[in-house]
Length: 293
Length: 293
Image 1 (cartoon, rainbow over the protein chains, first blue to last red):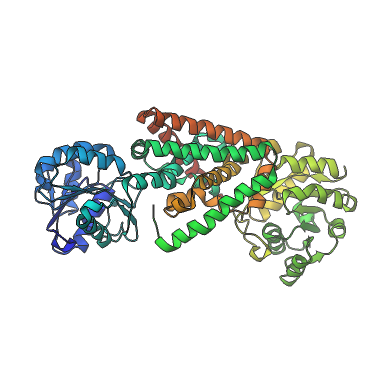
Image 2: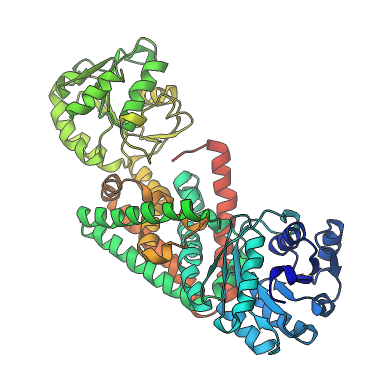
């Protein structure tokens, strides 16, 4: 298999919001491709069949991957190692294995440990639909203009290009980062805001929060995401998350010192630094990439 | 003067977004009331006259308040002391003086120091329009459903009720808090999110921020507010802001410890606490009060 057009069958393991959206979008946008699906839950398999989420939904994980040239894990990160082990014996030589996890170092480590040498693992991180859950929300436009990071690999350039093309056919804007760089960057711009938002809420009492307005609501929005998924993500990216907390603590110290010393100029300087950074860079980002997260 | 209907003239000092919106709204909603305005800037007075923001725009601050039964300061907090001193000799006996500042302890302290005993100071904090600036943005519906805190005073119940009625005629949902309670609560739900947002941005490099998505954008939104106004607000509420930072640092420590000890259950518990607090309380707040901030 050299290009997306040569793909005959793909398998998506895990049929929640992301997995279900991959199958639906692949079915509608990639003509002639057979889309297989698997879920470890009987009830999910039933629903997936009723909704015709895939061309075929398998009861057996090994059978589900046996005929596919591309296998996509769309389950929680900490299930990957187990799944790699379960499918290892059923994969065809040359198959590309990827995942949609929010961290990329651990999945790659587990893939190297557990997948056979004649298949290629390359990580993916399509950044879409973080607040809803379940195949009920799956849709064929979830990835439209979504950012997707692919941890492209110089030793497997052909497979990397195929995978990138696959995500771009699904509607994504695809960028390459190494697993380590991905995890460091997304600790800072995605995982850290989640930690900060949780700390802000937990620092407040229920009675004070009755006075919360739009500022607080927006600042804390992402803390409404599912706690189990986020504890997975943060645990899978511990060192970078810890590093991010330490950097934020340093910045909080600077602001606290300015207040303690009643140094209004310093305070304004720190606030202004944040303001101008946000206004220039982030609004550029919104304009240029249409990123959803 | 016993009720809003008995008011013959009010004066708004400072004709920016808030001040200009007070004059416009008072003109359109309070029949027969004369609305006077003052700005220390010649160019602002000119623009205010061109836009007919008030019935009369005065060049002299003393003259602007001399005939009014209600005087509203809508200038930066740290100008209040000076303004109180400037208008003290021109105020009529029985006049109510208020302000629209985002903190309430310092304005009250300055009022007690500088205003004559035959006038009554009661603080106001209408929470509206924090991100735009200047009379160009003034409008007569800015206060519609906005929260307004009045630091009502038991010794001046009649004047407190009149002031509350005034804000409610302008469209506000009015609540009473003491100055100390106001400053403590708003340090937590408004000033602290601003500090946190600034720390989050300043902890990140420009190149990492290129990858920022909607989560980061929302979490950091309020840091785009004007730095000089926010350094004023934070400086005017230093002790409470410092206390808020300390509480947040404690919560960050708990999250950092859970990560350092790789205690996923603890991590999920902390995230879940934040999630359920936000989902129940804050969504109630949005529904019940339609707060804008």
